[in-house]
Length: 380
Ligand SMILES: Cc1cc2nc3c(=O)[nH]c(=O)nc-3n(C[C@H](O)[C@H](O)[C@H](O)COP(=O)(O)OP(=O)(O)OC[C@H]3O[C@@H](n4cnc5c(N)ncnc54)[C@H](O)[C@@H]3O)c2cc1C
Image 1 (cartoon, protein in one colour):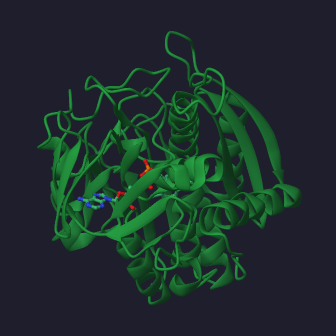
Image 2 (cartoon, protein in one colour; image 1 turned 45 degrees about the horizontal axis):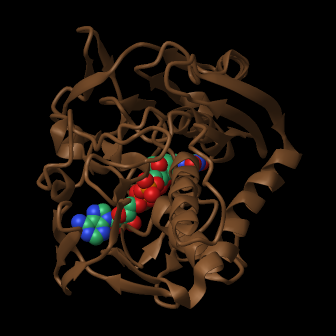
């Protein structure tokens, strides 16, 4: 069986690891990504706030060696879901099974004024560059603002506001600064009222002002104000923005999308095309866009392919579950376990912030690096 996996992020890495672990050299997997390495989303915040360095969080694909898996670093230029074929700048590739795991791209230029007057911190480059901006920030009005929906990792803007508080305290700038959080959600984590309550209490305790149900439409670089969708304006000295998300252009051009994302069977992750699957942020499967969901979806597809290969019984279907760790600052992390199932109200179980969960989160990262790359993440 030849399997072509497009994208070596959370979904692509989990899929290839699981297939390789069970099928080894019996399977012919080609994994393609344009990047030279993988960076966890949460590592972007760690670098941005000076907790670690860019080198320590980039996991190179160079020595990605697994039985049955070949990695090719190349830009994918077109996808033909009918022929299960991709054209890349390293040549064309086709397979018996195609899995699209290309994630969501970000478009800061879609928000007028964001590139000129603000900073986006959702891309790897944007977050790493914001570190220097923070280093030279002398205090003032900080806005953490979301510009459109859907957006990756819904807790991340809340975490950013809390980490910003710690950062400013540490630099002796908190007394001369204000932090505001503008979010399109009615509560910080809608499926978990307990997590939302804890976050709202943490904002109140730290004097972070919370602006729910709102989106930032544009920034006026001259007046340095954020213009919100409801017509109000908020002045800022530093604007940290979550930019507009969309599928990579190559996915949009493939004809696979409906309303901007790839529709899939929510139980099996199959697309409308035979033997073509899609997992993670690139889909409209109905879960939030986060690595833990991409990973679990990839596991379902891997198990289905393993079952087809005769190495196991029927594969379980996707259950919409995911565990998110939430940085509360003060060296404490909380955990929320959420479930998103089609036709059911999303639900969540919350574990209070603690030092123990900080260690749990570190293990979440290091265990993935061990499994996906076969080495330790020494510097976490
Ligand atoms: C600040 C921040 C914090 C976050 N924190 C968390 C967290 O704590 N927990 C969590 O679960 N999630 C978190 N996330 C979200 C998480 O990073 C993403 O949801 C997750 O990476 C999505 O996985 P994926 O496999 O769908 O796509 P990705 O991991 O984005 O992988 C897609 C891959 O496709 C490649 N690609 C795209 N286009 C092309 C092309 N044309 N040619 C070749 N390759 C291409 C990309 O290079 C990329 O490697 C966070 C995100 C941010 C921004």
